[in-house]
Image (cartoon, rainbow, N blue to C red; front, side, top):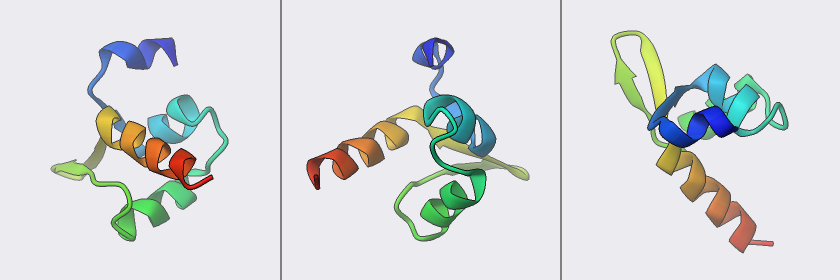
Length: 65
């Protein structure tokens, strides 16, 4: 996750493999995106997730515990 510290956006696959360290699947991440729990930016056909959005999602999930 060290390489993510300088980045502002990641692809869905990068979010699943690097940010969540393979603890969540790509399809589960798409489900979160489609349900509106994680907001994205679309550039052409590419879907990018702001790192801040992933941080917010994790913060909300941790506060529910």
